[in-house]
Length: 328
Ligand code: NDP
Ligand code: MG
Ligand code: MG
Image (tube, rainbow, N blue to C red):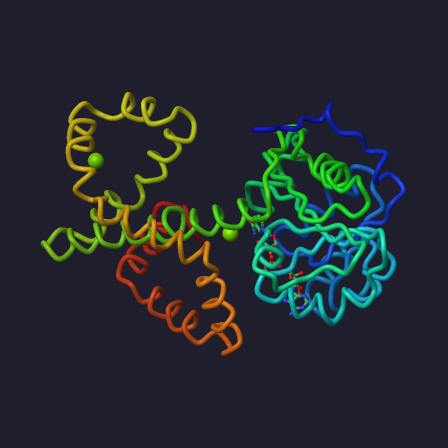
C-alpha cells in the first residue's frame, strides 16, 4: 500500500493553477477554504440564488456561477451530490473544458459507472477525505488533517497524480497520510461499507435489537440505552484500541457473552448476502437502481425517510437525547 505524506508532495504543479471547487456543501466548503488558506487560487462555482452562493460570499471566497468557474479554471473539483453531478457536468462544466484541464472528484461513482466521461486530453483524478466536511475543516485548523485517498483514472498531462496529491496536501490530508487507490476500488468499497455496515447494517442491527426488547415488555427508554446509546462508547473503543482493546474494557461477562453469541447474529447467511450485495455493486446493478430512482424523482427514498422517522426508536431516542442534553 502506497501512502504519501507532506514531504513526498511538491506544491509547484498547482501553485499557479486556478482551482474551481464546484459546490459549497459539506465537502465543498471545507476543501475550498482549506485550499484557499493553503495559498492556492480557489474559485467557488455555485448556482446564483442558492444558499451556497451567499455562504461562500460571507466566507470571503471568490464566487462565480458554475459555468464561469469552469471556464476560468485549470482544475474543476466537482463537490456536489453524486446523483446530480452528471447533469450539472453536461450542462455547465463539460462545454468549458479544454485540453490540459483536470476534472477532480472526492468519490469515484460517476466516473467508475460511466455517467461522466471526460473529453480527450483532460485529466480525471480523485482526492477524497475519509471523513465528513466539518472534520476536514476542523482538523486542518488544528494543524492536522484526516487521511485521504488519491486516484488517477486518466493521466493526459503526465502529472495528474502530482496534481491530485498537491490538492490533497493543501486540504491537510497529507498530514495524516494519503493512500493510493483506483476509482473502481474506492467506489465499490465505499458503497459496500455504507450499505452493509456503516449505514445499512448498523441501523438494522440496532432497530431489530430494540424491537426485540420492547416487544418482550421492557421499557423502551432502557432498550434505547442498551441497544443504541452505548454503541458509541464501544465503537470509540474499537476505533482507538481495536477489538482486543475493546474486549479488555468491557466486563468479562460481556466478553464471554459477546464472543459466544455473535456468530448467531451475523451468520453465514449474512455473509452470503454481503457477497450478493457486493456483486450488485460490482455489476453496476445498484448504480442503475439509484439512477432510476432519481429519474423518477426519488419516490422510494422519500417514502423510506417517512417510515424511518415514524419508528418508535426514533421517537424514544429523540426524547432521551433531549433529556440527556445530547440534542437540542
Ligand atoms: P452536499 O450535499 O453537501 O453538496 C451541497 C452542494 O451542492 C451545495 O453547494 C449545493 O448548492 C450544491 N447543489 C445541490 N444541488 C445542486 C444542483 N442541482 N445544481 C447545482 N448545485 C447543486 O455534498 P457533499 O459535500 O456531501 O458531497 C460532495 C462530494 O463529496 C460527493 O461526491 C460525495 O460522495 C463526496 N464525499 C462526501 C463526503 C461527506 O462526508 N459528505 C465524504 C467523502 C466524499 P445550493 O446551496 O445552491 O443548493
Ligand atoms: Mg459514500
Ligand atoms: Mg450493559
